[in-house]
Image 1: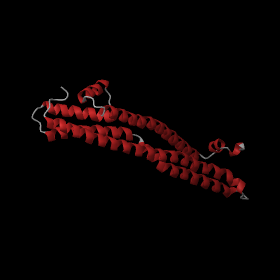
Image 2: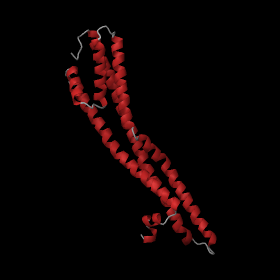
Image 3: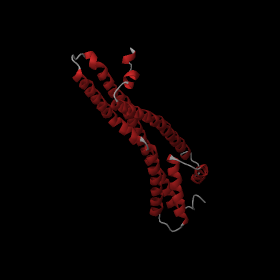
Image 4: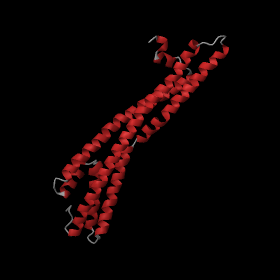
Length: 230
């Protein structure tokens, strides 16, 4: 490609507004890719941790021992955090002695719901940025293109003879902004849809676990056993 038609050359020689648009789109693209790589790790870790905890939970071990293990590790997230807060509240209410079964279950469910909401909020963090980049980048690029084309044609006002060769460089510079806008938007939209689906699936897994764990706690409460944490 000739030097005067290279993307870098045209971007450096574009008008100031077009260069500003290119800078904004480049920054948005880099930011969205940083979020994409970070979310890949965060969501993959959450899925792996959920699978490991489910395997441990349904292995038939003692729930009190599992609770102590999670509590000692500290910094529990995801399903382990839901279990920890739910079991802790259940055990605390059981220690009061006279708490009815409905109150025990309601308190445990409320604590588990708080833990779930915090986890979903953590997983969804920065997804709105991807949605914003994906939705507005094409329009920002289009703005730069329109401005560049207007500048290219306005420069013909002082020319005695208008030719395609005179406006081609200006139009090419302007069209770069549309290309960069699409380059920033397409990965962001794909990543947002993918991550939103994965977070939704994790939320369903958390809901199912909460219902199953609530049934286990209900059997504990109805059996009249001693505090399972004791």
